[in-house]
Image 1 (cartoon, rainbow, N blue to C red):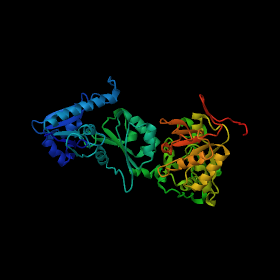
Image 2 (cartoon, rainbow, N blue to C red):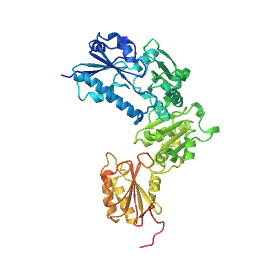
Image 3 (tube, rainbow, N blue to C red):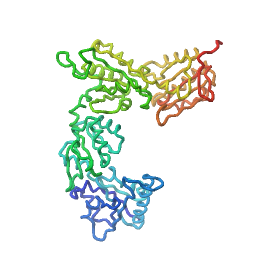
Image 4 (cartoon, one colour):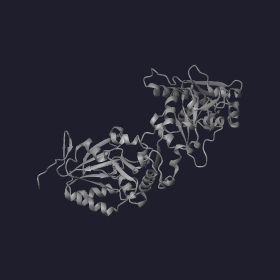
Length: 515
């Protein structure tokens, strides 16, 4: 009969924070295992050592590498994978011999701990039980006596090892946060907090619940003194600061200051307030125009669909207003209201804002007399059709049309009628929004319409995620196009009869002989 594996959380360091169940299991254990750094004591063992029974077998699982370099041919990941396999084999030997194994974990076993790697390898073969423990961040908030969240606040747990711009963005977009894994990452984390406008409400806590515990404002911490066993608490109360304006409902415009005065940062010298509508390009930062980048660096608010807002680097003083994909007019009204109140505001779209983007929605909302005093300026961006065409060659070198297959804002019969007219006119056709989770049959329907007027060997280009790491480009024909492989990440370009495929690429002559 095999033994049983227990993953036991021992809490953040204070032995009195070990749960009653964890203490009972440790005191009755035949084998106690724990992880430790090379040449270092195990914090989990130090916490629980007073509960070890006489004669217990101890298994110290010593990491071969932590943050240093390794000569392992697979690098750090390869060295750790081998270590976990070897550690699992050591514990499996005890389990096969019928001995129960208590594997200690600092904090909680399944929260940034090494226990989970043993669980992945051993749980499929052996009976396993996990005993939760008090996580370090709970001890840290208690040490600082600082409420982490209130009512409907969202708490985000972030590793300090994240890329600095992404960390800043996530800090700006959450109510409260815990930042783990500091040590050498602390300087970058501090910069991210400052960029997100959260530095003044960030508390640094070191070795929470232990005799060495200390806490102080992040701004006062010496980066050279930060150990790995530390974390940062960003309280929900910090939302009472610069970011509190972002919590208003979409579409609810802020009121102007009494007497019609605008706050500093709006239109200079009492001139007409202005709202910028900016195209971010299809994805890569290098496709953002210098004009757009300069404008984004000067605004105080960015409004848009969540994934597009996420592409704007977070910095100090920037408030982000992200929302879903079906509230364009609400977004536009919010942005117009902010501009009207004297704020410097940009509405962002992917690609070019004027091509199936936010520009039209902003102008529609701006027809309301309430926003008559706000000027709207559109800054162009690289469109998706330009990006896909450039990757393929020059397929839109002659006359071409652009159609969206989305029937959310226009009925499908209208789309069919336009497709048929384009097909009969012999124009190159760029197809946006070809499919989604709820629209799965429209590509096949469009293909049938086009085939009624076009040759089966008409060239079709399928671009997916163009400009990004996962980019792909395929050249096929109308007859060979498989609608099942098309999704919302795709843009299609259907050639004209004159479109050619050559060794250099796909191109459409600018002039053709009349038939």
